[in-house]
Length: 145
Image 1 (cartoon, rainbow, N blue to C red):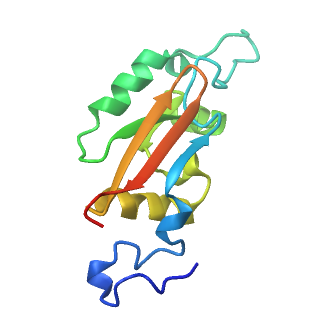
Image 2: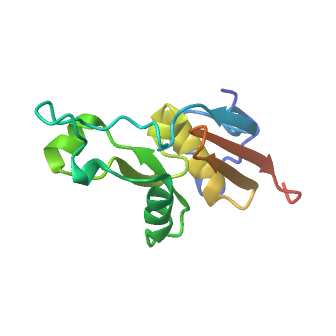
């Protein structure tokens, strides 16, 4: 975590609040089985053997829901736990920023991707493959750096 190359003024360093430095997120990384898919686990009523209506959903519904969230940060559809679906009578998906820690695997990575996304020094692209459940994030330095 060599931070020697970063500006001394933390206002100029988008990673000043991050435990990871930019090298930790530069390049392309795929996070496997993190998105909502048609295979996402849903609860089953033990008496009827059926999935409750609130837990029935398609990938298209989940993608539309994520896209409908009014925010400047692109959203993805993540699976909701079976416990959450039962306790809150909710759909089997939820929406989150594409760099959310439930997708990237750690809060440290979440913060680093967020810093890169918010910075003009980096370009950040992602691909959400709802068929496989994989999320691919690519971070590159801009030519201005």
